[in-house]
Length: 143
Image (cartoon, rainbow, N blue to C red; front, side, top):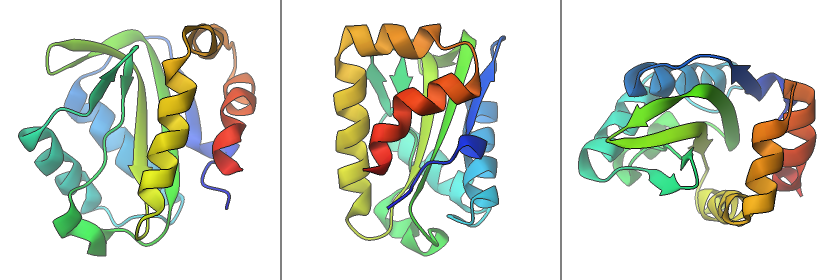
């Protein structure tokens, strides 16, 4: 199952707001045919309940269970903001938007969690110079 393509990986040199990051994550997932534009509201609902900041500079915004109808397929969006994003008081560098059909989101979440739990791997992800390099490091999520 290929949940990530090169077109769903971006690197920005600057910073942005949490709202803008959620919108970009949604826009990428919409372009991938994985969600409807309403999914951004689902992400906001989730953040209002519990922050999706995971540590190690990673935030993994995703929708609530009540908004499953906004999900058309499973996909990821990966955006690195080199200037960081203030994520409910934490500093996020990576914003990984997740859309998963059925229970697929749990498998996707665990793949991302494994990747970002290793500090050496996180260093490599931060050091990647191009979306192509970043995509190559992340391609394990498609296995």
